[in-house]
Amino acid sequence: MASFRPDAPQRRAVREVCGGVFGPGHCRVVVAQRVYHDGRDWTVYSAAPVRAFDVPPGLVAGLVAGSVLVTAAVAYGARRSVRRALRPVKAIRDELDEINTSEFGRRVPVPADRGELHALAQSINFTLDRLEETFEQQRRFTSDASHELRSPITAIRAQVEDALLAPEDTDVREIGEAVLRSLDRLQAIAADLLTLTRLDVGAPCEREPLDLGRLVADELGHRRAVHKMVPRLPPGVTVRGDRIRLGRLITSLLDNADRHAASSVSLEVRRDESPNGDPRFLSGTAVLEVLDDGTGIPGDQRERVFQRFTRLDAARSRGAGGAGLGLPIARQIAESHGGTLTIIDSPRGARFLLRLPLSREL
Image (cartoon, rainbow, N blue to C red; front, side, top):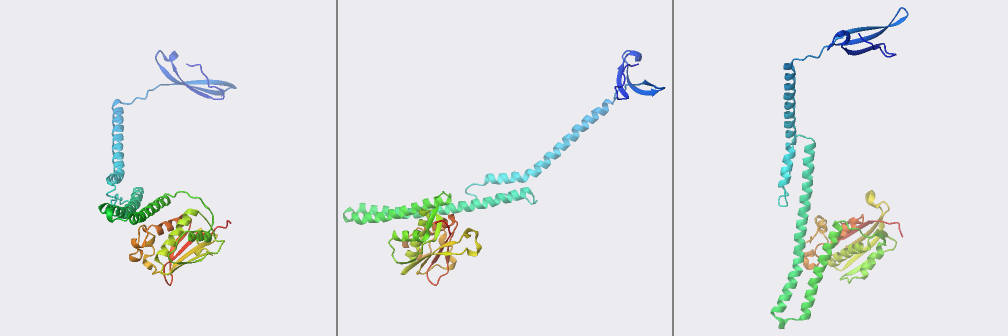
């Protein structure tokens, strides 16, 4: 029947054997089993017919057709579910495609279901809110800057046209001085706009230890004050910052105080403790206080003066000087140095308080 035997240590082996005692073209499954009998090892063979797995063709066709139908149904259901789930995304995308610079007020729809898409839509709307606010600020800034630049240009044009229309009645020196005043104003506005641009983009600056009292004294020495200056500038109050920018800050405060004072301006530099444990002033606070004896600033208007191109009616009109950029620049410089610039209460006039982190460097 067969000649194979189980390989040690196996005691059983199974093979398919064809021909031989089974006849040509016939196969059997033969099992060889090793047994021990009468003190000897014997190999016992047994055989069984090989039976093919016989499946009716109709059953096979049915199984194939059923699998195809089930697969198609699952794919269709998945497609519908995905399309339904992505419908809010399409609505958000379509709305974003429609938003342009003239329609910043539009917002994307927020799905009712509180999930990831709901959070995404809210984040997009918050971003659009910030973009709209930034765009509106830029639009106002551009409009105000154009208006400020147009004023001196218009004055120069009018002065030159008058001189051309009546050259025999024109005093060249008078016209020249008038044009120079307008050019000075134009140059000051351009310089302020450039300074604001550099501050907005966070342009790097040189930082060095500076004696705040000496810095204020230097700025006082470079100006012709209209009113009396009363300085109290003790040495040794050191800050770390950019000399040019801090000088620009001090100049803005002095210009503002001198412009609106009735008779005098008081200046005081001193050391102070950290206000309310502010982490920006852990090493102490260097304070510059500028107080004029003018009409002062109403409490509800104190933050407005730090907005760009802002003037407070008659006392701070264009005729009084300035384009409304000095104080905004001063505050931005203070903040870029880790400090603050505020207006606090005073019995009379406006009292500006500059706080900068105190430096221990000498």
